[in-house]
Amino acid sequence: MSRPVLTALLALALAGGVTASGADFTATSSTTSSFAAAADFNTVVVSLDSVSSPLAGAVALSAGASSDRGVAAVVFQAAPTNTSDWVTLCTDNAAPYTCAWNTTAIADDSYDVRATATDAAGYSRSSTVAARVVDNYTLSVTLADPGAMSGSEPLSATTANASGGLQSVKIQQRAVGAGSWTTICTGTSNPQNCTLDTTALPDGDRELRAVATDLGGHTAQTTAITRKIDNSPPTATPTVPPTGTGNVTMTADAQDDGSGIKYVAFEALYGGAWYEFCRDTSAPYTCSGDSAQVADGTYSIRIVVENNAGVKTTSPPSTITIDNPPRGTDVQAGNGGATVGLLEAGDWVRLTWTEPIAPASVLTGWTGGSQAVRVRITEAGTNDQMDFLDAAGTTRLNLVSTAADLKLGGNYVTSTTEFNATMTQSAGSITITLGSWISGAVNTVFGATTMTWVPSAGARDLTGHASSTATVTESGTDVDF
Image (cartoon, rainbow, N blue to C red; front, side, top):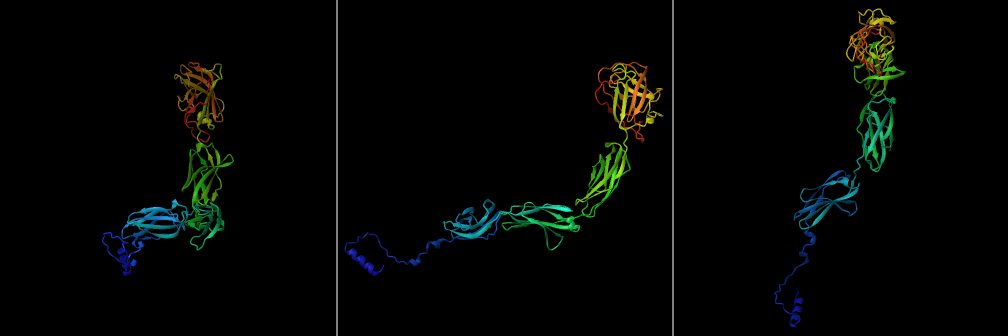
């Protein structure tokens, strides 16, 4: 304190204007320059590490921070650029200070990003990186694989996640390894569809790709794929046997030096239209089938070969004559006598095959006209059995496999009974009509019965094929005899 000030205070005291307090007074002196400003006590240092742009998906943020008093926390925040609308992304309380920022949780925009470090005394500082673009539109484009190509080949490209819409989608082609691409089509449709005229290009490998650009300035393109142009038809030569019985096998020779064979189809002309009945996709190309699935007759056969580019070749037709073994289709009986259900003259049995049977295979010397024969019925409880013999009754006819293989389904006789009879043929049917009674005893059967018949393998068709011996069951429901 200066001397004039002390003199003034002393004068006041002497005048009674100042009352002593009794406390000691210590004089001090200082200058304002000896006190630090408050800010000088903030020793926080923080630095937000580089943040790239644009940003998408999960972004890793990190910052360095220190303080003489120790760092209590680092808070990472983001705000739309040039605003103060800070939103906390995450807080880290220990070094290294990091944050996983899920940018998909906010709208695409430009953002300022900052890290704020606070020390143990509450002092803080921030480090900001400005104007970082968040763009979670991940533009993508795919090109549908056309496989091997021929003719007017359709192509299609599809985009996804375009920012602001599409600026263009291009489908392009080039010779393999060429320096530049030729655009086949371009537009903003999604999907983008167009057609490549492969006939204007040489056969062989071609590269294809699709390129998309959106209004946000993003560009995406597919990895180039190499696909073959093949406009040359494959060659085809069928081998078809002239006749077929039972299991029939046909083969074909097919070649394609470009894209390769996709399949060989075997077709038959039936009812004025071609029907595919067999297909093979690998060499050797064969087709086997049961000829019994079709009626006997002569058929036109051809093969259709398609290569992997979709080019087809059709062979000239060949012919095959299907001649299946005969098989029984039905057995029927009818009443021609006076009493229904009683075996007597005029009653008949008709055996039917899929085709005419050679008469001489049934009975030596028979030509199909009216022929005298003998019918024998054996008593077998409720399922009597009928057999057929020559007129003398000494030789069985080749109509029934064994004497027990035409079962009548009823008790028609009480002992072995025989009738004279006549046999006639009409197309695929042979009818036996009872004549006069020879011996035995008959019994009346009331109600409908069902017969079963096992044909004889001795019966043969006109080309010598033995009859099937598969069991035949009478069709319909009626009263026999």
